[in-house]
Image 1 (cartoon, rainbow, N blue to C red):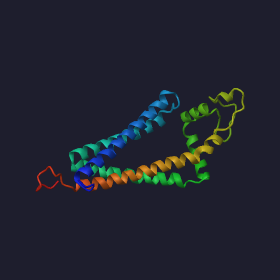
Image 2: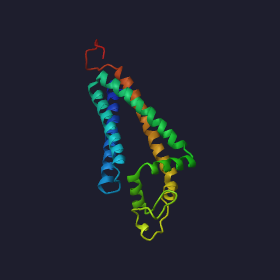
Image 3: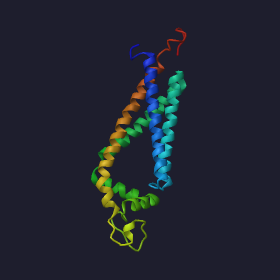
Image 4: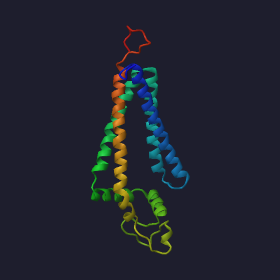
Length: 203
C-alpha cells in the first residue's frame, strides 16, 4: 500500500506518538535523576519538568489510542491540542534564538532573583557566589565562601547562556515541526476510510 493510504497514515501516527511518549518519559526521568543525585533541589524546577513530561505523555497517549481505534473525537481533540502546543513551542523557540546578549543577561538576572533554591544549587555546583556581585556578610553554600575568593555566578552562566539557548531553541524548533507533521497526519487520517470497515459507512 502506498504511503498515502490508510495503513501508512495509521502507522506513521502511531510511531510519532510513541516517539512523544519516549521523550516524555525521558523528561520525567531526567528530572528524577537530577533530584536523586542532588543536582536539583528546587521542587519548582522539578515540578515544571515533570508536569511538562506528564502533559506530553497524556497528549501522546490520546493520539496513540485515537490512531489505533480510528476514533474521530479523540483524533479531533488531539489535533487541536497538538496545534496549540506547536504555536507555543514555535514562538518560544523563535524567541530563544532571537535574544541578543543584553536580553539574555537581563532574563538570566530576573530568573536568578526569583529562584532562591535553584540559586543555591548553582552556587554549590559551580563554586560561585552572587550573580554580578556578592556581599560576604551574606551566606553562600559554595566551597569558595570559606576562603572568600569566589567568582560571580553571572560570569559563568553568561559564558554558556548563548550556546544553551541556541541548543534549546534548535531542539524546540525541530520538535515544533514534528508537531505540525502530527497535525497534518491526523487531519488526513481522520478523513480516510478504514478498508476493513463497511465501505458504505462514513468514518
